[in-house]
Length: 205
Image (cartoon, rainbow, N blue to C red; front, top):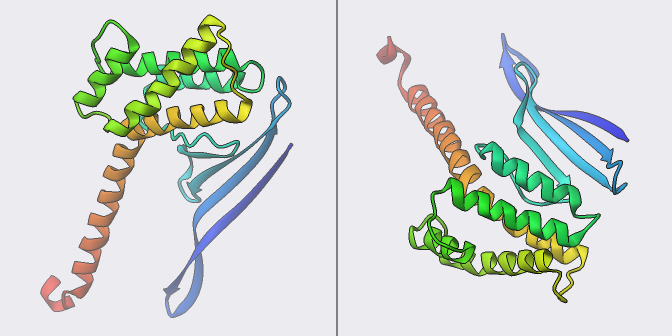
């Protein structure tokens, strides 16, 4: 439907001349789904000199708060399947989200005869905080309703809330740890640069 690009600049001094150096490029895309006919707005961030990076893609609308960095492909596939049905069939979407949970439990090696037992195992192993157990309960029950055609009906907005919970779990397990590692490396580099800049030039030589 439409595209837009912008760049962030950093002011530097080169040979006594002030210059603006592009450091971040943003490419925005507004697309319409051919099935549900709803819009999606996403942004790809990248360094102008290095090209765009697929792990810096962010969906701004509709939001599901999920970041696919370091996420196993099977979980991405299951979650994307749920997203594709959210505007078409809420029951199928909830069932797909429950399947995403099953996939997470399997990959994380959570043991148990039921999904509830596997979830409790993830919490007891401290892979997930206790608060998320309540969130997972909501998702599990909602998924059961979708599978068994029970009388409980959730609106699309409510289903999106459930999807946001699943996205939060995915981020907590996979994306956030990797983002923290990368940020720590950047901070270490900055600290090293500041330390080196504070040392007199004759000592560096």
